[in-house]
Length: 276
Image (cartoon, rainbow, N blue to C red; front, side):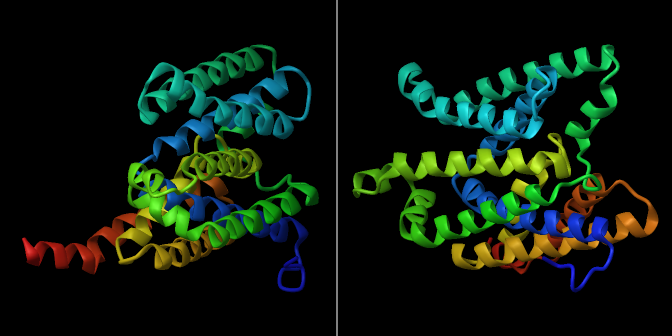
């Protein structure tokens, strides 16, 4: 897709993958952060991590296993909330602990059997060995995420403001919530090969947090967050290849650094300080 700009196929694939992953995760991150459910991010990222570990354990394609396991966890969240009468955060915490336990157990087993190197890619990602089909899948998920926001923008805005009020107003809260969970599940499952299970959460939360330092409405956040994630990710890929650095952790560190700078420079913070 970007071959006309970048001649090296490996670098081109890495940039394309990071761009599409950044767009999908940052847009979803805006919704998650505004709903005060950042726990969705780490729960679904570790569900994908556990699913990929199960796939490696069963000698099937890790990404396919990650998608199915993540979708299964996403499908459990609502029914567990309703049956157990638990808050969403509590349910997400339980499913996170379960996913993390499965992942750690299987990763430890794989390392004992001499397959630890491959398992390490699940932790930290590997943007060098990407298939063209994976990039197409990421592009499709990015497009699906954008379409989801455009089609259901009014409903999403109402839910982000207050879920109970939105439901009382006739908004199809459960439908939107489940679509969101399923898109997050697919996005993180496809992204796990790029940034790894331990770093997906950074892409889901940090760009939205950076955008919130400067944006006064949700519409602008949906624009600023992807632009920040895309710019930092593209620079991280370039710097990683240029200076032989691990790309996924580098992107995570760069995003964290940009967040720190954004907090210092945020005029919203200064406005709130003056009001106080």
